[in-house]
Each structure stands twice: as structure tokens, then as C-alpha cells.
Length: 68
Image 1 (tube, rainbow, N blue to C red):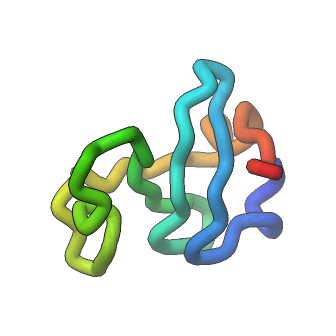
Image 2: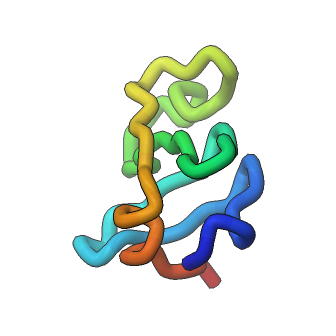
């Protein structure tokens, strides 16, 4: 994916098939949380989020694929 394709709330997968949700878009980076199968889905509501936010730079973004 390219940086211009990311919006807050966009869900996507990485090469490891992990599912992520974009939580912020910066000038060159995006911030996201990993979505997993927790019983308590309120952990993914925010901000603030109960799970760790991760920063993806332009190299990380290239390995992302849109979630259908």
C-alpha cells in the first residue's frame, strides 16, 4: 500500500497475515494497532487504546495489503 491509501480506521494485513487498523496518519508514517481475536473487543476502541500502537514507516507500508 502507499501512504495515500491509509486513513484512520483502514484495516489491512502485513506479510505475516497479521491484521492491523490505522489509528493515525502522519506526514510520512502511520500509527496502527494489531487486531486479534481477543474476547474483549473494547480493547480496540479508542483513543486511547488498551493495546500498544505501532508506528509504520514508508518501508513497512510497502508490505501492507488492503483488507477486503
